[in-house]
Length: 407
Image 1 (cartoon, rainbow, N blue to C red):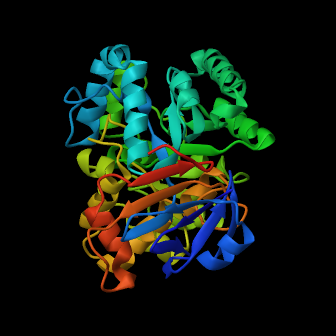
Image 2: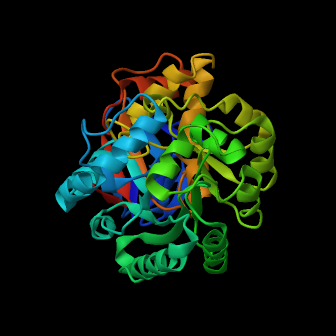
């Protein structure tokens, strides 16, 4: 048993003083330090540095490790030129993306306080890295394939990757999961099979959705830059589904919809009605010219969202605090104190619910996953701690997973 005491503990959207946490692999009690010391006299006492805030471990719900070798190969600015550059450089980037590079990026996430992440895997190449990572990993095996001629073959490969992730050692903290690439890239027949598979096995489910205006124009009108793309690479000028048909495929199972930048009010309301959630990737959306996700609309609809980094194919770091700071600047119209608190909640409690993890809050019975942040001085106003934490943190001061310290 261990007892940790910090100046402030983030609970229920507020920062409580004079509290401590007793924990093993899970949180056993949250109370006044003197009460916990009396209850657990043999516990190891951990006193944090002055001005330290104890957060639940942060959760990065959406990251592509397979493209971690990218630095300047891919073209940022607008979506379709970026996608063309992915096709052009994909093989070289995959070849250059060694386990060491991916391990370094997992460590980068860990140092920023990320204790769990959702890994979107197109080929399964990062499974060993995720097994060896100390973090919890929801391993999203991604299904892609819009050509009916190859659909069965692609689905068979997808099933093999699912089995591989299911056979991981229990000590690796891997949760097998299903990812659907997007409405424009997955044939409806195998889409429905994959959704049924996730539902039957109670696996987390996610999908990219309406990331760019080009995607919307293609799905609605079979026009625009995506038409040129599909004619060039896939010899087709007809989308395999519509926006409405795609959304309805997920009606019976809660899904984490990624991006949603170009979703309209009616579509967002439908996602909320069906109990889905959204992954917000501020820097990726900005770097690829996709637009701004209107998070104020999500709030009005009570549609929960997480904050995620996406991968280094469309970002410059996997640091969650870099993402928070970018979100503050992107959503310049939002009151900064309120937004800071909302971002913290999005990357802890709401992210945990979206991925089905027993984490995200500092409550009895939850996993003992913590991120400790040390501020430069004692806050004059506790209600501003979320903002100061975001502005002044590059790396967490300490990180615990299942009660063990890794940073």
